[in-house]
Image (cartoon, rainbow, N blue to C red; front, side, top):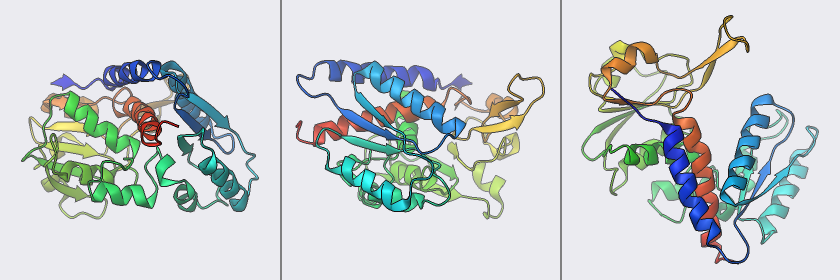
Length: 291
């Protein structure tokens, strides 16, 4: 069993971006990070994104509207950032307050600045295999991780467990693409799939993104499979200072011995998501005409 080290791969990508950005004469790429409210996880995520952008040399603007901001006001803020020629990428950190329609906010971000890859146009570009589009960061990170770990999906059965717009659907489309590293045969499963273990056991590559702690057990995995664990769940644990431990969607201890390669949680897919956000921001700068 080989552990796929997401931290190591992410650091390699960050180093490559740092080299590219340091060679830029003039205006550097810029990302606007919008965080509404004081959700603890959101604070941590935005801080990590800001720190990574600074490490690479990307300019970051952290914008902190009050939790009382209205839908119209956040639309106006996004419109302002869309029109700002000095901003290449815009990320609106989720979750947003309940009175704001998240999907409508994601759609409001200009497709040319949608470095999170959630705009309808960018999702359509993924389906059309248009390389000018922006791929959602977690699916993009999974594909990059597989490629850099020597996993070619050509002709292999890829089973995606989960059908979200953030991970499941886009990663399935990416695995299907007619390009090097892809060309997989893809099955999408979810909570309503009948005989689920019988299907997941067929996977040469199993991507678990169902959002349930340790849902994938040893009886669901074919020996020799590659397993990518996208989940990150907090499970109560009185032995930890925090009162919880982090675990993925895969029961790692029993599944790992069966696998040829597997990602850990934490330290697997998570770091890749931030690295691909930075990659998308540099791509947005490139495609902006290098203003």
